[in-house]
Image 1: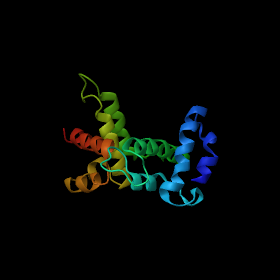
Image 2: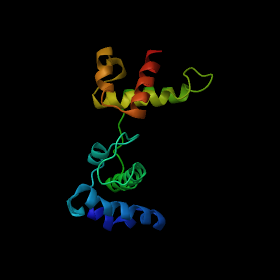
Image 3: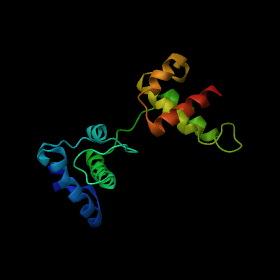
Length: 166
Protein backbone atom coordinates (compact mmCIF):
# COMPACT_ATOMS: atom_id res chain seq x y z
CA UNK A 1 0.00 0.00 0.00
CA UNK A 2 3.00 2.26 0.54
CA UNK A 3 3.84 1.98 -3.17
CA UNK A 4 0.30 3.00 -4.02
CA UNK A 5 0.54 6.03 -1.75
CA UNK A 6 3.87 7.05 -3.26
CA UNK A 7 2.68 6.64 -6.86
CA UNK A 8 -0.84 8.10 -6.83
CA UNK A 9 0.13 10.76 -9.36
CA UNK A 10 1.14 8.06 -11.87
CA UNK A 11 -2.39 6.63 -11.87
CA UNK A 12 -3.76 9.65 -13.71
CA UNK A 13 -5.86 11.13 -10.91
CA UNK A 14 -6.41 14.88 -10.75
CA UNK A 15 -4.75 16.83 -7.93
CA UNK A 16 -8.11 17.27 -6.18
CA UNK A 17 -8.87 13.55 -6.32
CA UNK A 18 -5.39 12.72 -5.00
CA UNK A 19 -6.10 15.03 -2.05
CA UNK A 20 -9.20 12.93 -1.31
CA UNK A 21 -7.51 9.54 -1.72
CA UNK A 22 -4.18 10.15 0.04
CA UNK A 23 -5.58 10.54 3.61
CA UNK A 24 -7.77 7.46 3.15
CA UNK A 25 -4.75 5.37 2.14
CA UNK A 26 -2.84 6.69 5.16
CA UNK A 27 -5.71 5.47 7.37
CA UNK A 28 -5.07 1.91 6.16
CA UNK A 29 -2.14 1.51 8.57
CA UNK A 30 -4.46 2.13 11.53
CA UNK A 31 -7.37 0.12 10.12
CA UNK A 32 -5.28 -2.92 9.14
CA UNK A 33 -3.08 -2.60 12.24
CA UNK A 34 0.14 -2.90 10.25
CA UNK A 35 2.49 -0.56 8.37
CA UNK A 36 1.45 0.41 4.83
CA UNK A 37 4.40 -1.44 3.31
CA UNK A 38 2.96 -4.74 4.65
CA UNK A 39 -0.51 -4.27 3.12
CA UNK A 40 -0.84 -5.83 -0.36
CA UNK A 41 -2.43 -3.93 -3.25
CA UNK A 42 -4.74 -6.71 -4.43
CA UNK A 43 -8.25 -5.81 -5.63
CA UNK A 44 -9.69 -9.28 -5.03
CA UNK A 45 -8.37 -9.43 -1.45
CA UNK A 46 -9.62 -5.90 -0.82
CA UNK A 47 -13.10 -6.79 -2.06
CA UNK A 48 -13.09 -10.06 -0.12
CA UNK A 49 -12.19 -8.25 3.08
CA UNK A 50 -14.32 -5.10 2.71
CA UNK A 51 -17.06 -6.23 0.32
CA UNK A 52 -18.96 -4.01 -2.05
CA UNK A 53 -22.49 -2.77 -2.33
CA UNK A 54 -24.64 -2.24 0.72
CA UNK A 55 -23.15 -2.55 4.17
CA UNK A 56 -24.99 -4.06 7.12
CA UNK A 57 -22.31 -3.43 9.74
CA UNK A 58 -19.04 -1.56 9.72
CA UNK A 59 -15.70 -2.82 10.94
CA UNK A 60 -13.87 -1.45 13.94
CA UNK A 61 -11.75 1.60 13.29
CA UNK A 62 -14.32 3.63 11.40
CA UNK A 63 -16.05 6.67 12.86
CA UNK A 64 -19.35 6.07 11.10
CA UNK A 65 -21.06 4.23 8.29
CA UNK A 66 -20.44 7.23 6.02
CA UNK A 67 -16.73 7.21 6.90
CA UNK A 68 -16.46 3.52 6.00
CA UNK A 69 -18.26 3.99 2.67
CA UNK A 70 -16.03 6.95 1.78
CA UNK A 71 -12.85 5.07 2.77
CA UNK A 72 -13.82 1.92 0.85
CA UNK A 73 -14.76 3.92 -2.25
CA UNK A 74 -11.51 5.91 -2.32
CA UNK A 75 -9.08 3.13 -1.39
CA UNK A 76 -10.87 0.42 -3.36
CA UNK A 77 -10.88 2.55 -6.50
CA UNK A 78 -7.18 3.33 -6.17
CA UNK A 79 -6.33 -0.33 -5.51
CA UNK A 80 -8.29 -1.41 -8.60
CA UNK A 81 -6.72 1.27 -10.77
CA UNK A 82 -3.21 0.37 -9.56
CA UNK A 83 -3.80 -3.29 -10.46
CA UNK A 84 -4.33 -2.30 -14.08
CA UNK A 85 -7.07 -3.22 -16.50
CA UNK A 86 -8.90 -6.49 -16.08
CA UNK A 87 -7.96 -9.11 -18.65
CA UNK A 88 -10.30 -9.24 -21.62
CA UNK A 89 -12.53 -12.26 -21.70
CA UNK A 90 -12.23 -14.26 -24.88
CA UNK A 91 -15.01 -15.68 -27.02
CA UNK A 92 -14.35 -18.82 -29.04
CA UNK A 93 -14.91 -18.50 -32.80
CA UNK A 94 -18.38 -20.09 -32.70
CA UNK A 95 -19.47 -17.84 -29.83
CA UNK A 96 -18.07 -14.84 -31.70
CA UNK A 97 -20.20 -15.71 -34.74
CA UNK A 98 -23.30 -16.09 -32.58
CA UNK A 99 -22.56 -12.83 -30.76
CA UNK A 100 -22.06 -10.95 -34.04
CA UNK A 101 -25.34 -12.35 -35.36
CA UNK A 102 -27.18 -11.30 -32.18
CA UNK A 103 -25.70 -7.81 -32.41
CA UNK A 104 -26.68 -7.43 -36.08
CA UNK A 105 -30.19 -8.84 -35.70
CA UNK A 106 -31.00 -7.38 -32.29
CA UNK A 107 -33.09 -4.32 -31.59
CA UNK A 108 -36.64 -3.04 -31.34
CA UNK A 109 -38.81 -4.70 -33.98
CA UNK A 110 -35.94 -6.95 -35.11
CA UNK A 111 -35.49 -10.72 -35.10
CA UNK A 112 -33.99 -10.60 -31.59
CA UNK A 113 -35.07 -8.19 -28.91
CA UNK A 114 -32.89 -5.29 -27.80
CA UNK A 115 -29.76 -6.00 -25.73
CA UNK A 116 -29.90 -9.76 -26.29
CA UNK A 117 -26.32 -9.76 -27.58
CA UNK A 118 -24.94 -8.71 -24.17
CA UNK A 119 -26.45 -11.74 -22.46
CA UNK A 120 -25.33 -14.07 -25.22
CA UNK A 121 -21.79 -12.68 -24.97
CA UNK A 122 -21.77 -13.28 -21.21
CA UNK A 123 -22.83 -16.90 -21.68
CA UNK A 124 -20.23 -17.17 -24.45
CA UNK A 125 -17.43 -15.89 -22.20
CA UNK A 126 -18.24 -18.39 -19.47
CA UNK A 127 -18.74 -21.26 -21.92
CA UNK A 128 -15.56 -20.40 -23.84
CA UNK A 129 -13.61 -20.48 -20.58
CA UNK A 130 -14.98 -24.00 -20.06
CA UNK A 131 -14.16 -24.95 -23.66
CA UNK A 132 -17.80 -25.30 -24.73
CA UNK A 133 -19.40 -24.30 -28.03
CA UNK A 134 -23.04 -23.17 -28.29
CA UNK A 135 -24.03 -26.71 -29.31
CA UNK A 136 -22.32 -28.17 -26.22
CA UNK A 137 -24.46 -26.34 -23.64
CA UNK A 138 -26.63 -28.52 -21.41
CA UNK A 139 -29.06 -27.82 -18.63
CA UNK A 140 -26.65 -29.51 -16.20
CA UNK A 141 -23.92 -26.99 -17.11
CA UNK A 142 -25.98 -23.82 -16.55
CA UNK A 143 -26.41 -23.79 -12.76
CA UNK A 144 -22.79 -24.56 -11.81
CA UNK A 145 -21.57 -22.09 -14.45
CA UNK A 146 -23.76 -19.31 -13.05
CA UNK A 147 -22.88 -20.00 -9.40
CA UNK A 148 -19.65 -17.93 -9.20
CA UNK A 149 -21.18 -14.96 -11.06
CA UNK A 150 -22.47 -11.98 -9.10
CA UNK A 151 -24.53 -8.90 -9.83
CA UNK A 152 -24.60 -7.63 -13.39
CA UNK A 153 -22.68 -10.61 -14.79
CA UNK A 154 -25.17 -13.04 -13.24
CA UNK A 155 -28.18 -11.12 -14.56
CA UNK A 156 -26.62 -10.94 -18.03
CA UNK A 157 -25.87 -14.66 -17.93
CA UNK A 158 -29.47 -15.49 -17.03
CA UNK A 159 -30.79 -13.23 -19.79
CA UNK A 160 -28.35 -14.84 -22.23
CA UNK A 161 -29.59 -18.32 -21.36
CA UNK A 162 -33.16 -17.10 -21.86
CA UNK A 163 -32.21 -15.61 -25.24
CA UNK A 164 -30.57 -18.86 -26.33
CA UNK A 165 -33.67 -20.83 -25.32
CA UNK A 166 -36.08 -18.55 -27.21
